[in-house]
Amino acid sequence: MHFYGNHVADSARFLLIYDRGTKVLNYHISVGWKYEDWYKLQATGNYYHYELSDISSPWHRPEWELGVQNYFMPGEQWFITANLNLLGGIQALNLKSAESDTLDPIIDLAVKVDYAFTPRFSVFAEGNNLLNQKNERYWNYRARGIQGIAGLTFKF
Image 1 (spheres, rainbow, N blue to C red):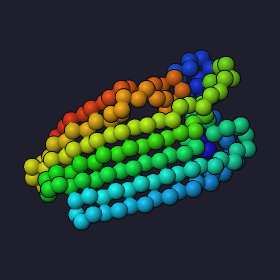
Image 2: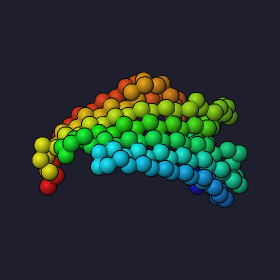
Image 3: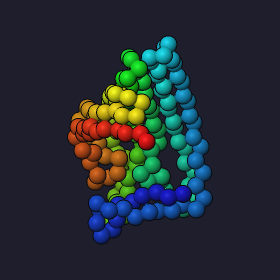
Image 4: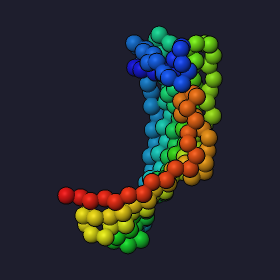
């Protein structure tokens, strides 16, 4: 299994670190709820337990993940999603200094709105990291602040 460590020459780059005998036990729970045809809720949780043979920690892999996804369809033309994702227990390694650390948990709130003019043509707007968190999924790679994107979709 592959893991990541910050590069010796440039800590903003990564080297792959392989462990030949990795065993991962994943505890997973998922629940869902649907109300009529216009609302759906999905919540998931994962906890990972790693057994390693060649390295000391599962570098840059999460120990746990939580997610809550909401789906709204207030009309036939509208589709709205609002998602909250949390990720934590990530241990990081700098190969140059041999320094290691546990990164702060990641919280990401995202919303997306789609409007379909026809079955083939729609527009959308999406926002990510709406809480403006300055977290790191990988050491020395801070997340951007609030991010947005808008666009058109055409199916053919």
